[in-house]
Length: 246
Image 1: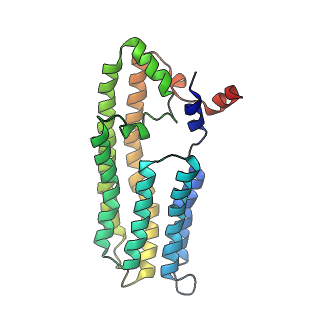
Image 2: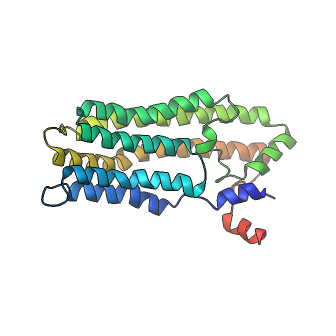
């Protein structure tokens, strides 16, 4: 049986549809369609476009009552994007900012691996995805903890690689797509920023997600061999657990 506090966490998963709408679709439309002077204007459109992902990030933190390191970095990133546009910094520094966030996460994944709360648990060995209590019990019962640690180390390395790749692609994409200085043409800068955010889902998110999926597959496969559990036993079933709690 899964503990009640873990079951509660399952009921607080992020709504991916709302996330995509607030973080991608609405900012893209505002920055590309409403920046002209005869509409909202460049400054207002930039502030409004960035307010949606910033507001969503704050709302998600409050609503799910979880201090999420990645969400905090996302809020910082959005805030810096708005600040850079308003103070009209050179596009080079915007590209540096885009690369610094995934680079910072990759470094944190590396530094926290030997700590009591490794960041890899947020991405892969997450109690919102896996029944970690059952898995830990089986690892203890089979004496497989040391073997699991080796698999965990490999997966941690793959995770670091995914963020380093994301940092490099973020920098290159920003340098290629955000070429207009905001002091010269803020309307065009807004349009380029919106298009870059849209393209990043395909150029950056997909390759990074692929590496993460490989790491997750290796983790789940290794756990299955060590514990004897099947995939459906390791994955959480929120609906089923909710029915049991009634």
